[in-house]
Every structure is written in structure tokens, then in C-alpha cells.
Image 1 (cartoon, one colour):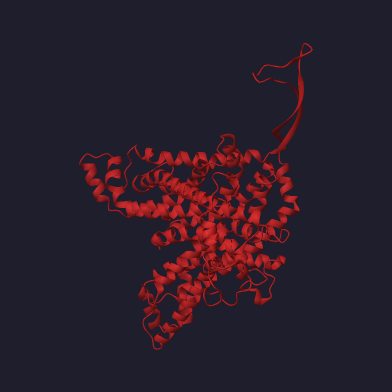
Image 2 (spheres, helix red, strand yellow):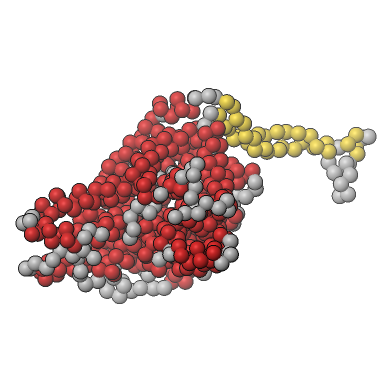
Length: 314
Length: 286
């Protein structure tokens, strides 16, 4: 039973207007910029200006106003329409290919590990044990710990001289391959708890009868796991996977703090390259094209997610 | 709660599970503990402390770093900025999102169905921020809003709006409809039923949602570093800036990391109940 009064539009209007102004408009503006070469230059101009006295009047010398040379600096933004050039550059840019590779390797290292570890921990702790609520509370801490600060903390943990993991002899941050593994480890530390909490919540929704029925049927624990629990939890796994994929594509803060994208560009994910291109090198048009490249991938994930979720939002 | 029925050897299994829980708790607490341990050390102790760096056991702790760092004008200003921005964004997102959540929970929309509207709001949450940072930067620059609290409040309110909608929509759906209908029969308007009946009943959730989005805003870094340079820098930007100018001084970093991490973490603990539902966009009810 739902109401249909006209006032319903008034309840909705402010938020809709807000999203149009602060999400749809920037996305549109970004798309527009992607077709331009935007250049920011400081133009230095030499001009002649009359010399003024204390009262602001021009000083007259030999019947003429006295002039002086002045150097003016002006920030000039020029944009030139270049059609699809930014997108062409995107697909042939080795830097982009490198950042895509870093992002993909990171996804493959971190996301499956988070899901598997989260599931195992949820199975392990889906029982009445001492201090379970304390454990649940502890698992919330990483999710809400400031990612940038976490990056710096792990920089000190992975520090290769005198750090707490130095005894391993592993070049955690100085070797390109290991540095990316280190970034993935931090992400796994931060997001395994999320997978754990969500899967645990789903596990607790499994009715008791199901365990009992399986036991009466003589199912072993392994059968119980593979034939009952895993199929039952598959929708939850898919949702967690899609959310983690969408979030992991945003990776930025942790490598920013921990490795600065290095050594070289070994841990520079796509988001960081796009950010640098736009706001450090001010190649705004190209950065916008890059953003759209990422957006295209994220849109696929978003659509898969909401297709699964559609019914539950009715 | 679903528990497998007790079996022989269950107490041994429980004991092992408890040990595992202690181990897991150790792993997930260690980095935060490590930052705290670093913050209590002399610079000289930074790289020479053995083992787990336990204060009094492995080194003599000092509060010097805390005294040195917490009182600096830069730290105080970044804490104040983060608080202002997070409160502003939370208030704005609640003001916009609560009526919208009520609308999709209680009214029927036809051309665009309720679920389409909900999805439209929620999909913002998954958008990569780097896709909108350039246009936001240009717009804020042309409005003269770079390096202001207002710019950061506007941006963060946008990011956390979906979270508000997903939590409060479910809260309103869970409220009994009869109370509001009785009010309507007694001549109240829809707005009156919302304002005087539904909203007070949802107040605890409203407060919890406000806390969680406060924590999200507190932690946001990409837009904060893009849009602020001096006056409006938030805690994460302050941390990154201090490293740029002085290198990573582990003992000070410990203090700064703790000042960044502790507030959102404490807040999240207060609002635990809504975290799973919120982070999965309503897909799983925690």
C-alpha cells in the first residue's frame, strides 16, 4: 500500500536536483572536456605603464607622462577542440597501459584473497565463542581507519631497515613486484573485515533446520559446506565481489601514502595516473578522457550489481 | 543465530576457534597498535626497538611527540577543518536524503518506478571519484571556492547521499504504516506525518547514519587534496603535506596517524548496526 499524493515529488526534488547538479553535471562537463585540449599557461607580457606619484597622478617628464616597463604574469587557459584525439591517445599511451596493468594485477591479488579470507573467517566464527562481539568490533576498525593514514602506517611497518617485518628480508617497498604485493596486503588488511562481516551476516541468516536436515541425511561437514552453504551464499559472494571490484578500481590513497606510486610507476594505479594528469600536470582534457575510460569499466560493474539488486529496491 | 547442533568434541573446537579469534584480532589490530607504539618513541628508538615494540618492555615511552604535534596550529586547524567539513556534509546529506528516502519508501512513483529512483541514487556511491574531480576543480575555481570549507562540504555531501538514502529508506519501510495513516485520517498533511511521526521514530537511525557519514567524510582524501591548499586542509591532507616537507618522521607520523584514525573508528563502533547494510547498499541486512 503506497500513497500517490503529488507532494511525493516535493520530498524527492531536493535530492534529485542535488544529484543532477553535483554528479550528472560534472560527468557531462567532463565528457565535454574530453574532446578538448586544455592548456594552462602562464603568459608573461611586457607592457609600459605610466609612473604614478603618491596622489595617483601620472608623473610628467618633458611634457610626456613618464613610463616604465612592467612584467605581467597571466594565467591563461586555452582549449582547442580536438575531437577524439584524447581517446586515441588513451589507447596508445604506454603510461595508461602500465597503470591498467597495475590496477588489474592489484585487483587479482587483493579481491579474491579478501573474499576467500572473509569467507573462511566467517565460517570459523559462525559459532558461539567467547568474545565474538569483541572480535566483530575489532573487525570494524580497519574498514573505518583513514586510508591515507593507514598507508603511512604500513610504510613504517614495511620499512626495510628496522621495521617489524624487516626480518623477512623481503624488499617490501623497494622492489617493483613486491611493492604492488605490499599495496595489495594493505587493501586485504582493510577490506577482508568487510567481506567477513557481510558473509557472517548472511551465514547467520541460514536457518537451523537446514543444518539439522543435512545432518539427518548423513551429510559430512564437507558436503554441508560445498552442497548447502556455498550455493546458498552465492548471491552474497557475487554482491561482495561486485562491490569490492567497484571500490578497488578507485584505489588511490594507500599507494599515494605508502609508495607514491613507485618505485618508478610500479604501484601507480589508474586513478592515480588520472589524478596526476589532471591536477598535477593540468592536462585537463586528457585526464577527462582517462576518467571516462575508467567510468566505462565501472559502469559494467554497476549494471551487474543493480541488475541483481533490482527486485529488492521495489 | 544458526549454530550447528552440538557435537562431540565441540568444546575442543570452540577452544581452537577462540585461539584463532585471538590471532585474527592481533593481525587486524597490529597496524593501529604499531602506529600507537611509534608515537610513544624517541626518534632514537624508532629503528632499534626489538620485537613487538611494547612500551616499557622494549623501550621507554615518552609523550614528547604527542605534546609536540597535537598542539601545533597546523594540527589544530586541520582537526577543526575536518570536523567542520564532516558535520556540514553529514547535516546537508541528511537534510537532502531523508525526505528522498521517505518518498521512495512511502509513495508510489509510476513513470520512473521506486526501484529505478533508488538505484539512480545508489549508483553514485560506486562512481569513481577521479571521474568528477577535474570538473569539480574547474567549477570550484571559477566560483572562487577553492580552499574553502564550503567546497568540501558540497562535494562530500554528494558522496555520502546514497548511504543516507539506503539506510533511511529501509528504516522508513520498517516503521509501522498505521501511525502515519492515523495521522493522515486525523487531517495531518503528508509532510506533517513525516515530520511529526516518522522522523522522530527514525531519530536513532538518523543519528547513527549521521555518525557514519561523518566518518566517511573525515576519511576522504582525493577531493580534499584536489580542492584545498592552505586554509581548508583536512587531517589526511595535513598528514600528506607534513610528509612532503619533512619526510616521514616515524615518531610524529604515529601521532598524526592516530589523530586521523581514532575519531572515525570510535564513531563507527557507536553505529555498528548499520554498517553492513550501508556498505552493501542494502543488499545484506547486517
